[in-house]
Image 1 (cartoon, each protein chain N blue to C red):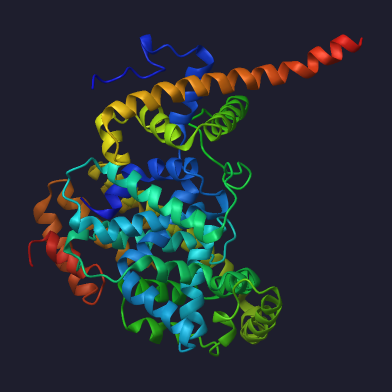
Image 2 (cartoon, each protein chain N blue to C red; image 1 turned 90 degrees about the horizontal axis):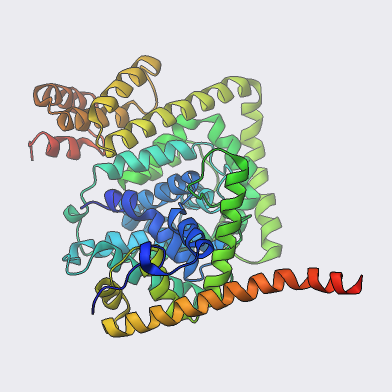
Length: 307
Length: 178
């Protein structure tokens, strides 16, 4: 077949209006915010999907999950669906974690025998939907109250670490059977809201006195997340030198930041990309000493040719 | 080829095509996730015999079909209020609004096309795929791609004319009353 000419090109024959309509369609882009949020959910599913989300979903069905395990996965992904619902204030942080984690994830290196992730993820997203919407304000304040713990939980989820339950258990919420009963039944939505708000109100009492400090911490976390995200994007765009410059700035601004681990893993990658092999090796060795159990450790070792 | 690289390069493609395959806006984020998780699962088997876009479109089509059937969603054009799409417009608000209007009209016109014709039209005119890529993605001969494209263009043009005529009609009626 001889290739037809595109309608809007030269002799294609489209009118000006037709061409303009087509041009608008060609130029359409996914909103950046949605892009980041969806990626965070994909990363969650891809990096730990079979283990973390699958476990959360399966456990939600058997009632064996802690409320956090199910709702962390559900709320995180619900945050995607609801876009700016801020189900988790750390949504940006999750995006960064997801990105950093999967940035280093070479898909071919994963076992090809993954059980289907989609149903688990969909359940994790969908099942607690009524709960998540009822939970949103509480979940939000929980994340604000202890973003570091939330990050640790997300990190564990992302890495598929068995420590996930231990970490999520650090801020105990009683197992909540309503979590898996909630979907699409209006009556259970209010029950869920009641049950969850009772549990959360107890925790909220302990948080009231230092809410300002927590808000400030949360704000810093968002700033740090944005900084790490910018580094990752710059690196992906192939601009290693600029990524290194952003890394230096982020280190200055957030020397003890909650995302230091992700940032430093990116720095090894950036140095390698910039051709600074010796510095990358030095940085990688420092990373492995500082974060020997990091989910990024394996990728760093690979980058350095250590495995 | 990593999942993230594919996402970086093709997320817009998946977003646009899921919308045009009739995935409602409130289901779009989940559908995009589903597509890329399918990519994640099947990437080891992807041998590059087709282009990535062709492969992705096949997955999009399957995901969109499943979601429409599963959720019994009404086939509808994505609600611009729910999914704030981003036309590549400048910061100028007027330009932005104009672009949004164009996108809404484009959606409306595409929706009016026969589904088989719409796939070919969208992939060729909007996604810049070649005839052979489209033939592969849709599992049809290249000659069929050409004929569907011709029919789609004619239908698109006719729908736009009808739309413009309908816009002018109330004005004419008002004029005749006076």
